Length: 192
Image (cartoon, rainbow, N blue to C red; front, side, top):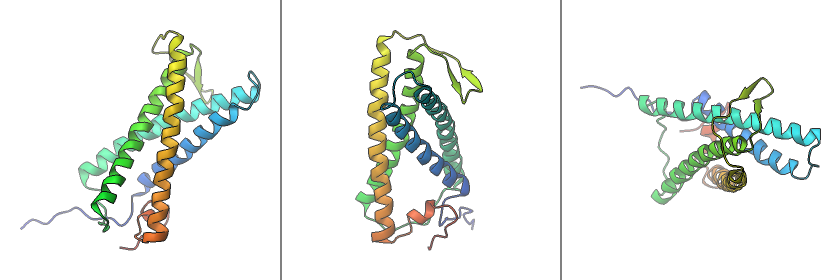
């Protein structure tokens, strides 16, 4: 009789936790910075600098999300991501899976829209001033407003769904006390 080598985990691995929290911090910074520069005077060095950092963090987020997706594929295919089951209603599990899927789809859409928006402006942009990001597409200037509007709408959807995700994690932690949140906290020990 052959035994299974898949070990059920009580918490996520360190890389998954790191990528999760880097994603959260990047999304919060990107959303906040876009709203902060709106109140700054156009053409000022502070506004331009904040926009430059926003673009660079957006590029960094693209790398983080790519890494997350590749790591997730690897951990799922090798069984490394198997977690101890938590008793919860089927509807709640379905909502959690749909929320995670929506977050991933919105993150990918937002990154793509960010690049398209920037390329449509026909201005060079740099990754933290180190190297330029090549212009891959040649868009009509009419597309700038379309991409900008879509980028803004997806940002709001992302923040709202991420907020619901965070509230659900807090509900699990403080009301249900089922250990779901502890699985994603750095350095925490999750009870079985």
